Length: 230
Image: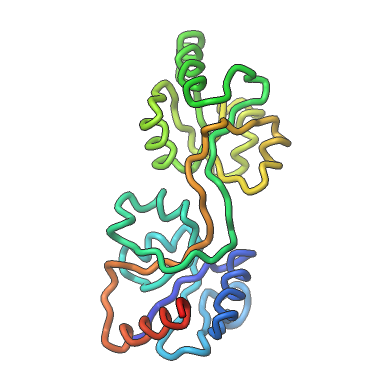
């Protein structure tokens, strides 16, 4: 049995993760073509590489099918309601930084804070007969944030891509989405609420709290953590 390390399977997140481990003397490499989801680990014994989508890694950690995994803070918090019981943060990797925020149309000149949003949402429902729609893929995080802020008159609309365009396309009145520079928001004539930061996220290495470890896997874990944190 080997210690299973889950890594995002493509794109900049995979490349940056490979670089991060390489800087610590651990070489990760994909086996074969970009269409293959297998890989190898050199520089430390007893560790196998599992290539997954970043969105799958929280689930696999929580199920104990992988021992370690790299994914964003946002995905852990969104997909695992009991994340503190299921996973433990090992190391923030220093890349993939993005903020989950609330944004409204720029022409809503009287809406800058959550209190303003609460009033605007109530007025919207009174005027239109239905709740103000917020496009997002982060339903749990947005719902919890707005509940604590006392905002009630809204409905979440699922959006798995091009979220900022939903306002222009009139499928939502505002958005809750990840942003790193804010350029896409500005290009779609949206503005951040001044107190609308829901979560700051970055790529992070997590350890499963529920996975079972053989003696060999426990030794490999100790060696891996010593290499990473030492």
